[in-house]
Image 1 (tube, rainbow, N blue to C red):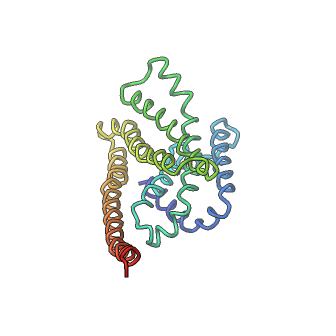
Image 2 (image 1 turned 90 degrees about the horizontal axis):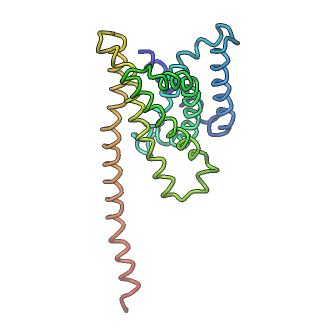
Image 3 (image 1 turned 180 degrees about the vertical axis):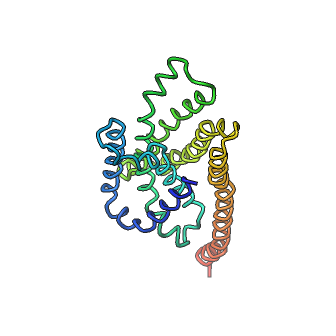
Length: 244
């Protein structure tokens, strides 16, 4: 239930802050870095109890995961819908913010989990989750860097689109990572863990048919537009090429 609350607040904040995010994205990137720095400072005992809300938002990766969910679901809505018109222009900025926060979460756990992995102290589910997290780390770096406009402009459109399609892989692996972390507790009768598995499954698995449906609708719309344009083009060519 905690994730749903964070997700709801993230959706509201995204709508409310969409104009400031577009106007001054670097201010939000800087704030994200500051939050990550505060997380590390809090874990080092430098902030007392003031940092504890970050446990839920960053250390447990709920805020970045909620932002990634918003980014993915924006693609489910038509481009000309209100959601599409308002939020598509800041998808890249939201992705970068989420990447910064998620990388902070990963770096916090990297050292202790790597030590356990090298010492052979991981069970199979945790080892699988750690392996997936390493792939997610690499994907975050690639997707985050290529989301910057300055980098995007140096790439061909085809290459950039192909790289950004890795976001689907990232979303799927994030779901697998979560399952490896909480499913064992759910299988052993943990009610909270079972509820979390159900909620994450609805959010992640539900995205697949919604995105496929949007793809089919968009393809059908493009096909109709292309078909409607063809006769006009043919008539124009006929008028030009046929002698009077």
